[in-house]
Every structure is written in C-alpha cells, then in structure tokens.
Length: 149
Image 1 (cartoon, rainbow, N blue to C red):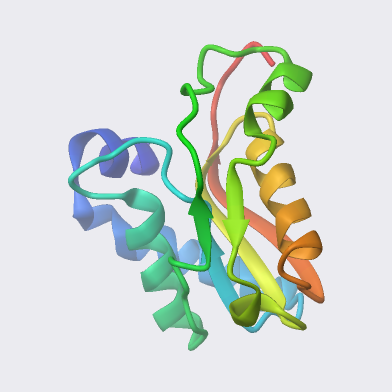
Image 2: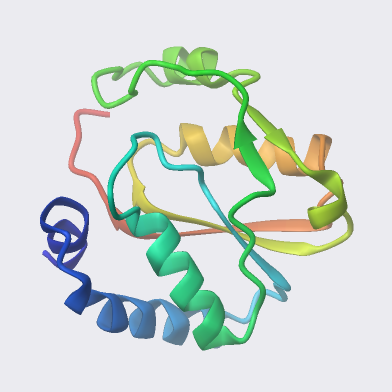
C-alpha cells in the first residue's frame, strides 16, 4: 500500500517508513556495498519514486547515491504488457549504458521501487559488470508487482 501511495498518489509521507524498512534490511544483510544506483525510471513522472527513495536510502545508510551512472540510450515500449520473459530481455538488450568510472571495482546496490520479472534488473546487472567493471552487484526493490509472469 505504501509504495502505491508514493508512486500513484505522490504521497511523500510514506518515504521515511519505506526507507527505514529498506535501511534496516540492508544493514542486517550487510552485502558490502559502497554505492547505490537506481534503475532508470521507465516513465516520466513529476515525482520519481525510485529516485526519491534511493536518495533517502543513501542518506540513511551514509552511502553515495548516483542516479546518473546508468543511462537509457534508446526508448523502448513499456514492459508492463509484455508477459514473455525472453521478449522482455530482447526489448531491453542494449538499452542501458553504464558510466564505468562511477562503478568500476565497487560493490553496487542496484535499487528499484518495483520488481516484476527481474528482466530489467538482470539486463542492468549485466551492463554493470560488462560495461562498468563492477566488483559486485546486489539488487533491492521495495515491492513486487502482481503479474501473470
């Protein structure tokens, strides 16, 4: 309910509770990260939940947050109506470019507000390793979408 309020109702009052839950999890997990990187938003919104939450999580964990090291290099259709995982991967191929100087040799927390199939996170993780030379990539999302996948 909280992620929905933020994403679709622009209710920023839920940010602190979501970030506290995420920070508590990351702290107990302790994967050895030194940079938080958001998945680029798929749609333009006045308030971008992934950016608001990622920046607040970085402040809470005292870790840098870099919203610019992964860029979309081309437009693609929204994936919400694509239910075949392989088709999702095909649409995502070559979509993201990584700024290697930001991630090379670092432990990355790839962060998103919504997880559906994992295809986007998998594609970006591959780019972080292959293009960026990341040492480790760990993924964290706030919520999982209900879907037919």
